[in-house]
Image (cartoon, rainbow, N blue to C red; front, top):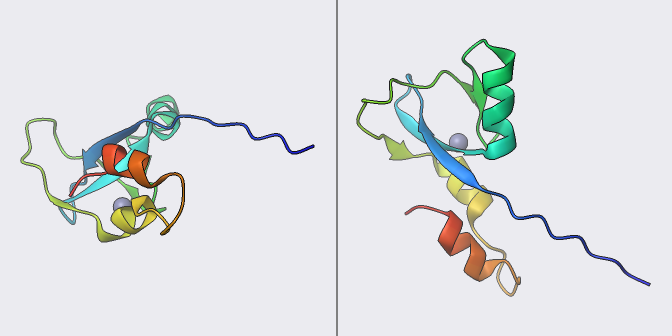
Length: 87
Ligand SMILES: [Zn+2]
């Protein structure tokens, strides 16, 4: 018997100080960054970065995060990735 557990992942786009790029951060990653207290977040692309001020202009979308969010052709996640992703 195959059991599948679905977990909805919520993302927040966070602008990095340098280079000025927007990375997708999961809610769990966001909470971990806050809890660590060092002001560093990890994007879904794996990059550790320092977020820019909230009043900063958004940067370009991280190409590596975008690849992670790109659905595999024929996958059931296709529709969901369009909702979660940017650009
Ligand atoms: Zn990224």
